[in-house]
Length: 362
Length: 133
Image 1 (cartoon, helix red, strand yellow):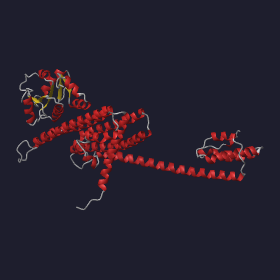
Image 2 (cartoon, rainbow over the protein chains, first blue to last red):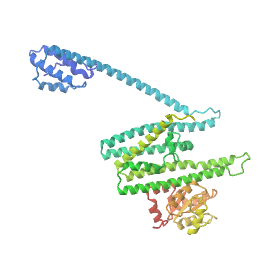
Image 3 (cartoon, one colour):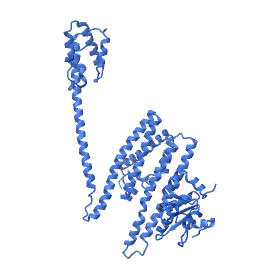
Image 4 (cartoon, rainbow over the protein chains, first blue to last red):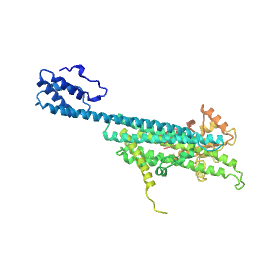
């Protein structure tokens, strides 16, 4: 059957509801055709199908309706009522869509506003401090902007990491291919390496900030060792989550754990030596005379080594991650990364819970 | 300040507090001491600034493997001269702490740390003659 093209209305306001409206018009059109029986059954079939379909019905369904012409014919006014209901549903749907689009536009505007505010406050970070001495202002300004930049970056890093954890979880449950899983594992690892780069950068600005772990939650800080987790401790937590391991893997992981512990001990002893050195330098001459500028200056020089310690600790963390990825299969590595992410999430939840739990009066 | 590697002197150094991390301390007493000779004579030798904490870390790591590295603590005044001479020996740039194994430059703390974690350090130590077994 062919429909006169002049009966098709422009789709601008009709959107996905063309078929229904065209049926309405076609209904009128068919009235004028000489053989009402055939045309009525065709309309009924099409309307029945449309009633059962979702709002995004396509045109191809109209074409197939010509195959069915064995239905009992219903009274014409029932068809008209159905058509009217359809029109009403279509109108309501259009209104809903309009409201949704409006909401999206508002959100978009708000997002632009927030981004502008953020940019402004970031720039203001460069001018923080109330000192009149511009030199002093410059240095503390640079440190503050370095820290502010890091904190912003870390927030984004966290969001991305949480997203990756969800992806890993669903990927492991869905049994995706090893190749796809490998991509997730690789991006998870690179994400951690990115954090180490960020930390290295802010350590140059203020190493004590990194050492303090101020950007972390309280429970995470409790486990802190030279600005982050102890690799051997994490291995102890995560390895039981990655079972089953082959005998060779168990051996390799044990060796890795031992190597980590040795490296951690060496770094810890180096830190102890640094503390002794700084302490000895500060107290290197007779105290009690009030003049101590040279001693403090010398101690400052020694303290520079702290940046190297932070970098070495992160280097150790990175090496450990890397080595684990060599020992484990893709699937095991994915489980390991998921367990690590969740462990940190639990630590963060612990921090929040602790902060909010009622305390006994002193 | 023992230069010999006998067991007794090693123990003595260790008990002394091992403030350099535990290696056999060598002190350059005169400028005629050939650094190239030191590098060749010792299976493992670590050059570093006196009192350097990074040097301490390197020494402790090596000691943990059962290696008794020779440690050359360089005074600040001699630092540049030593670095220059070592660069000539090596044929390239040197930074403190610098670890030489089997007569060749091995690297700094970074390399020691990485190879320690991957397990490559022990075979290299054996090859350099610093470890037996």
